[in-house]
Image (tube, rainbow, N blue to C red):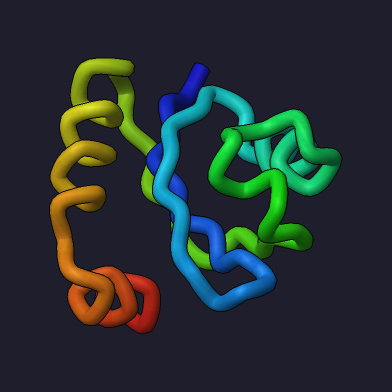
Amino acid sequence: MGHYVYILRCADKTLYTGYTTDLDRRVKEHNQGKGAKYTRGRRPVELVYNEEYDTRSKAQKKEYEIKEYTRQKKLSLIEE
């Protein structure tokens, strides 16, 4: 089972970073309003970036790191 860090682009062009073990399910949950509170009023969302890790710990460490990035740095990451 993979552990994923992902970035969503919301309908209002904001970015949301999260962690999951199932990308497809999680994106569907966000788009159904069952995901994070932040994305509920910003639907639809689009998956624009993801990285897979072999452990939950590594993935969540990267999630935290990305959440500390500036918007510009996140956009650069997405465009790589």
